[in-house]
Image (cartoon, rainbow over the protein chains, first blue to last red):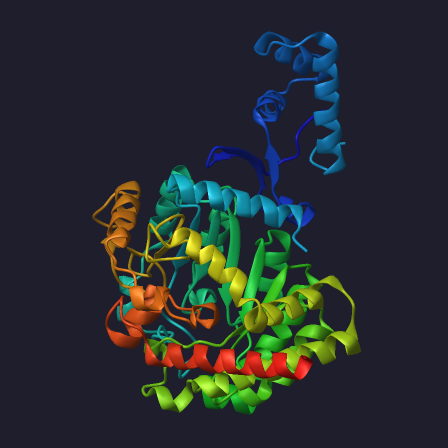
Length: 88
Length: 378
């Protein structure tokens, strides 16, 4: 599970935004808004984290139970897949 | 209808405005142009070495972009002059395109050949805005002094579309090209491209003497009515697609939707003379590296060769707060019909806070036309 190249996470005016740049604009000419948790997961993904790493990351960083953490990670990954932001 | 993208941009703009973050920047990469348009304020000769020497270098622009990004810039317009005259435009654009901006390119399109179109297709900007100055080589010659520019621009539009580039078209209206409007609108409709009409010329854009090219207030309103009728006809004739619908909405807004605009202006008018994003979230950098509020205002002006970007931005915002609002305009009964701003007042009258007769006339006739139109409907 890896984020595609040429996607930049930026914090702008208090919002976390994914900006596609260069070649990636061909595939995705928009922006994606992430909440605080989404930005946390994105940074972990960018470091090479896998699904289980993301779940454990959420559990250690936030006050959530494992079931909720798994559901949140799954939803986040699904959104990225839906937008085509993950490598196959 | 607004897309999720539009809404996100609006949200960011609002947040940036409240926090005074320079979200929107325009880099005027050059003052040189291969056209010599009568109404243009920035068209130094293409090969003027003395002008080239005064332009910021590519690396200076990239450094400024880095500083602006660190301060919060997201939306970046690259404009001129004609940006494709710069021999280093590919280096500048490619570098900026990897830095995390949404880039919009302003161009006359005439210098874009197949190689450039393919290059842009590989690393596309968010969008490109191409100005059409007429619908024939004759109009281009008359208005821009460049007959070949017409064919070159038309070819460029189709090549860029073939590369999947997001395009928008603009038409700046003058007496020399106003009769080409229907053909230009048809050209844009056939291709599903939105068309924006630039119907106001600042005095410094006005062909030496205003009367030579700027439409009178009465002719402007008549032109917009004709444009609106044209877009309605074309919409029925060509398509129900999304983009022509956008064009229709733009036309509708220009004539009938002044009230909503004014309400928004009222909400922000208390703090600043400006109702736009100037001094809240937007800035302009001239080809010589001077930060100014917008392309039409030359004060406050802060030299970025001598000042840090963030300091310059703070000084710009502070300076703009000292610009007085036009109280007479705020209280005017024609306000709902008037697209007034301090930059227009200053260039029209020499003062920020005095009504400009041309704008007053434009508003008065707009109201008359709208009332007549309402009477007919009733």
